[in-house]
Image 1 (cartoon, rainbow, N blue to C red):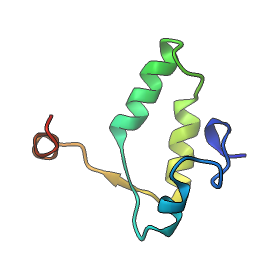
Image 2 (tube, one colour):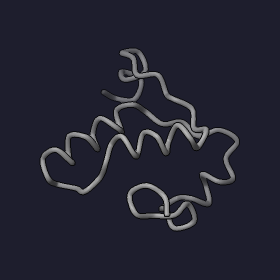
Image 3 (cartoon, helix red, strand yellow):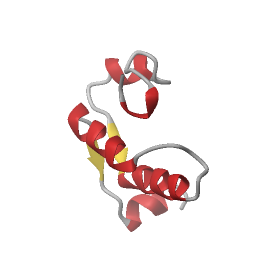
Image 4 (tube, rainbow, N blue to C red):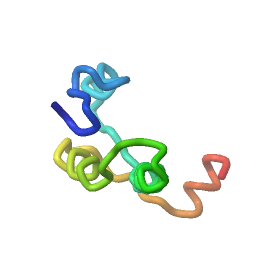
Length: 73
């Protein structure tokens, strides 16, 4: 069983992820999970999620102002 109660084959979008050459993850995603978990809106461990992302070989998407503006921030 993977983090958040899902195995890799059960996770939404996993066929796309598994067939991709590169997968990027933003630190903002972990931040959002931590906030929602702290508020009691979801049951998740941001440390466990972060470790699973690091172990997966996903690439970190740099969080910076030019990128945020380009995405409609």
